[in-house]
Image (cartoon, rainbow, N blue to C red; front, side):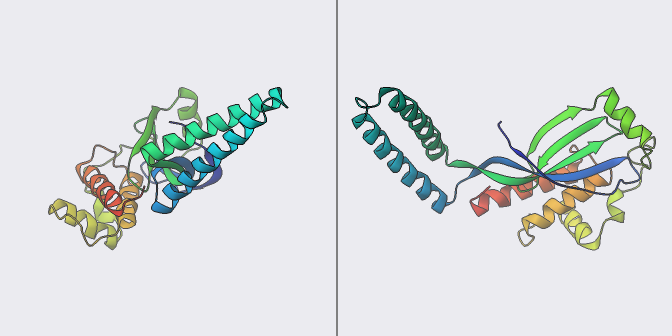
Length: 212
């Protein structure tokens, strides 16, 4: 997947579990809106017209013609692909979670809950994190207590709904995503049942909104 990472990012304070999360913005495929689809269609028409004009000028400027025609053909292929897939690159917030306990870094789209990548931290990265003396780096990820008990009230309400098999129809997607991020900051990984359920619900709500 081709992504473009911007320079803007935020980082949360380290928790007592050695787990930190920061957010960045990446250009990722998203379902096009009706306006975007219409704009792509207009660009395709304009590009075809440009190609027709260039072909008419071929005899007078063969070298320049070939370069410009090639650029138009490349643009046409890109736009046609967007129209077929109905997906277009858009800036999306991505949460990067560094879990020292599991020696793992995970990138997750905050709009859909999709895991973009998961990698093992290198020895050099782990050593750097340990030298930074983050609180709780050498402590276990969970001590046996329910970590959700320390969550804000609005997060606990969502968690209770998940545990009661509530579809959370009245809860906004962004609140569910925030609850997922809180849980991971608290030391819960993507295999936790509550987090997995919240990610599925957030993704379903995203699809229901008709954009990504």
